[in-house]
Length: 184
Image 1 (tube, rainbow, N blue to C red):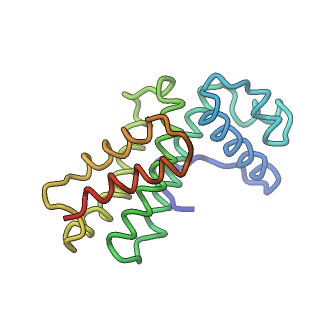
Image 2 (cartoon, one colour):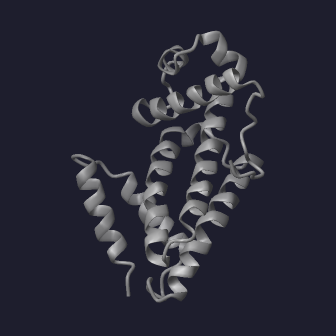
Image 3 (spheres, one colour):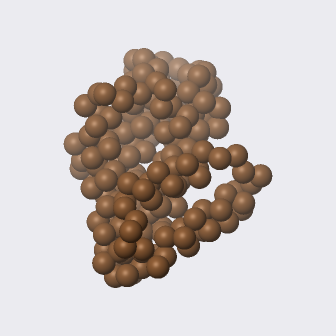
């Protein structure tokens, strides 16, 4: 895993780490599907652990929410590293498609995150540090309109991601249309 200033501190023992990771995955899915008010007991059940294990790892709902957010940003950063050796446009497009998943999780929990916190600011910095080089490389290669800015693209994709779609196929078509609009 990429070390960032926001990396979630995982337990050392392998079995405890598996439980921790299962809780984060279950919480991410539950929050994205049902919102941040999802029962912690239901998250523990979906992770295949007892509620005591959840509370041992995340003493409060806020701890769990912040860990899910940090993990999502960390994975977004890792996704940028994973596509960095691809040609400029496919690399950026692949990262933006992963960004859509990040937005879904963020939207579900944003009201419970302190946007003025050091953690939130660090997450934003890590996200920009991951995606902006992909954007810049694609723009220098002439694959993206010269008048587009990275922040504009993130806002475009974020806005699209918050819309209600009939299904994933429709969401993917709409995203493709928007991304095609970035091309010169």
